[in-house]
Each structure stands twice: as structure tokens, then as C-alpha cells.
Image 1 (cartoon, rainbow, N blue to C red):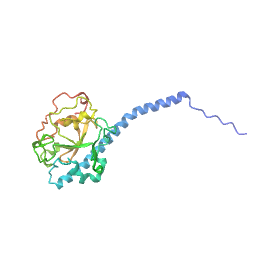
Image 2: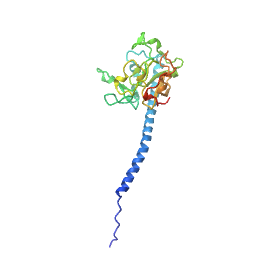
Image 3: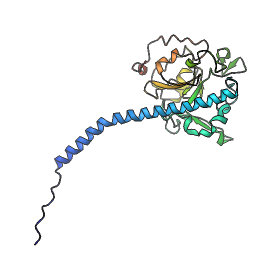
Image 4: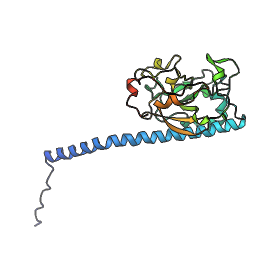
Length: 254
């Protein structure tokens, strides 16, 4: 006769609740760390994309004797198409901003589209944009801005402090030292319209920082609060913001 085997002891309800509670506590501890790691990874990828754009801009400049694109027609998209075309759409967007407004992209985390109705293959999506002062226009104004303030070449003195290409809500903008940060977190497309060019770049995608490709083709992580100390155009006052920061910016790093 076989010996009677003991019936395995089951977990009690209290034991199960204790295990579940421990798992919940561990998840609560780990999730913020995982989110930080994920955000850091996206920031690193964003910097990598901009370093590739640095190579693209450098190739263009080598072919055009350091003279910047004219701005019209085709803004920067068409002049650089020969150089970026093989890279694919991946490097055209910051990994934090890949969706358009229509697809659910919100606030700072929104990509823009250039749509060609007659030639869909020429359509273009991105979430980086050019400092519009980095063009070599042929007329006296470009989109209503005085072209004597433009940087027409990349080999100018102090080019390491001149933003060229960076996180952006539109494919370009004309920041001025008189521009002020939006009073609240922008959530509507209309918040980015108008003549305030700085707000097209003042995007909190990287916890108070933006990744910027400068006119010397270097890439640096740059705090949003320091935007008013960069030389966006020839007469830009780099003394700083000068006013109290709006609420959403007060706790951001300098």
C-alpha cells in the first residue's frame, strides 16, 4: 500500500495580499527610475540625430563654400534633400515628438508636416527646425524680417554660440530678444502661431533642456532658460531674459 502523500499547502488570502502589496511597492519605487532611464535614452537618441544633421549641414556647406541656403524656395528642406534623403524619416524627428496634432501629439511633443498635395512622395515630417536667421536671403526681408540681421555664412566668428538646427514645433522660426515665453504650458496649435519665434523652439521635451546643433556643427544640451544668452541673429541682445519667468519655467534648471 502506497503511503498517503501530504496535500500541498495552498497560499492563504493574507499571504497573497502581502505578496501583491510587496510587488506594488517595488513597482512604485522602480517606475520613476524606469521613466527617467527612458527619457535619458530618448535624449541621447535626439542628440545622435542632431549629430547626423551636423554631418549633413557640413556636407552642404562644403559644397557651397560655407554659404547658407537662401530660405526660399523650399526653406531648408529642399536644399538639403540630396544629403538627408538616404537617412530616412527616423533622424527627422526627436524620439519624444513623432506624432502630429491630428495623430494625438500634444503640446511640446508634436511633429510638424510639410504636405505636397500633388506629389505625396515629397511630403516631409520632422520635429526639428532651423533658426531662420541662418539663411542667405536675396531680398531685403524674409517672411517680414530684416535680412541684414541674418547669418549668411557658417564660418563666422562666434559660430559656436549661434543656434542652427534644434528641437522645434515648426520647420523654422525667427527668435528675437524681445520675445517672451508663453505664460502657461502651450497645449493648442494656436499657441505657437504669431510673430513670437522663440516659442517655436522653447519646448520642454528634455526636462528643461533642448538639444541644439550650432553653426560650428557641434551639438550641445542647452537649458531653455539660457536661450536668451545665445546669438540667434547679428544684433540679438544676449544679456538674458530680464523678466520673471512664467510659472511653468520657474523650476527649470538654469
